[in-house]
Image 1 (cartoon, one colour):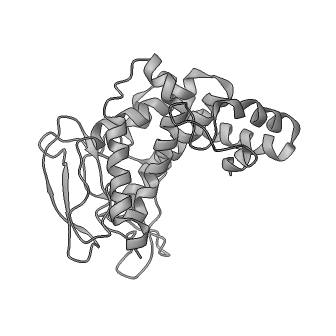
Image 2 (tube, rainbow, N blue to C red; image 1 turned 90 degrees about the vertical axis):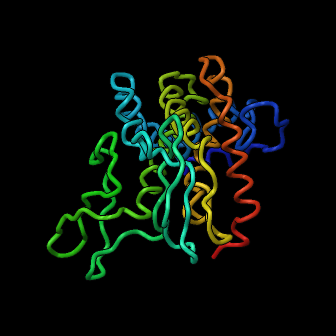
Length: 268
């Protein structure tokens, strides 16, 4: 919904100026005027800000809270860098490598988990997640009549959960760009930094042509798009605050390369 705020802006700008993906710097006042004058635009912005503000406020007091809920390969010796799919590209069958930092967990299956009776499971909220979780299973509640909880493989919930956090980072970066409130930038930058540091050591999944970079299928790599957009809004903030940015663009290049050679044209 927040993208409607940018519907009247020009997307033509030099790529050495940031932001330049959704908007350009001189569009800011146009968007702010729209928010001030148009009730629908104000509602979109207010909803966006209200969604992310509780997490930003918590981050000021406990910066590890959101970072610890990002699903990563955290155990030394199991900070995997290489991932291997089965012949159909449906599930991961092998992991290898060990990075010096936690790496981003890859969904081990292309579909969400279901019970033996065919019921789906509820994706846990961020508040329900185990911080610094090192288990490859989750205690998930089924949507069956008995609502039973079971320790199971979360399958595609992995990228869904991380995608929620990525979306929060994008929302926070938008609020920062429009308001200049640095606490929102810090929240988004810390998420981006943890993700990029780990992903910089990772390689695209080995498997059929449709396997992705951080998803078993390239379709799932869309969950990483919010962080690339966040980077565009945070570009100058990251450098001003001395974040280690050397690995960021390398990760973006890996995603772009994977999408180019294995992307949507080659997917289902």
